[in-house]
Length: 304
Image 1 (cartoon, helix red, strand yellow):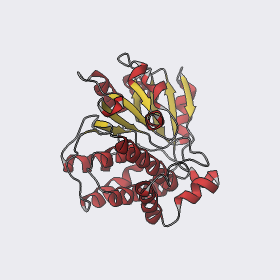
Image 2 (image 1 turned 90 degrees about the vertical axis):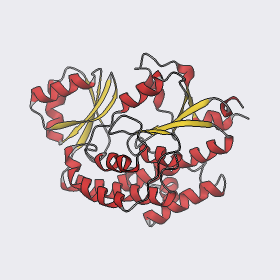
Image 3 (image 1 turned 180 degrees about the vertical axis):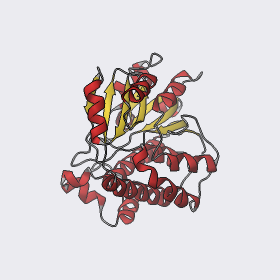
């Protein structure tokens, strides 16, 4: 198979657009995928497979459930891709997808991975109740323009995700987001999330996350892993830990990560690892991108 020789970078999805039935075709594929879902369920204290199959959707969208489910799906696809013999030379993940990227690089164990995500998600959920907020996607603006508009409006908002030169996500209180949406002459979309992730409203979670990470074993990745906070590959365990702690409040530098992957001299094939393809629309904002450089993981798994 051609993908066994071609260098690839795995791009893992984060939260977004959960649906009843997601993951159902993955958890019984083999013993390894069963172990992944068992581990996630053990950490959660309930069978997350049941939440995927039965819902209700208002439970599946909850951050503590959704982050574990998304990660179990990501790791199941990674396990199946590895069995196919794909030549993985790099990985990165959007928001909580970053943890999957670290697991794929063997920087963290399965048990520690789910323990960290469970703690992260429950912390975020609790903080969202104490300091309610939301997020707004902005189309047609780059990072600097968005930053300047926030300053001009005097709004207590943060740029949660610098996704591309034409897409930003901002977060903060509902009132501050409404002010921005009224005044900005650009398309804005309120996201269906329960909190203002990657913003100052999550600040109280940084030190507890840092403390937990200090107890976990993190090893140098076996391939390059682009981190969201720095927007750079990180290979030192302490730098990885600090990136993960600051992840709660800092901008996801997705544009920087993808731009570097696309500009690499021996540019790898990008594999979209997600239950539903999402990466193509975003990559179309990058001048260096050509559609033949992206494939969804299901396509590779379907190839004989």
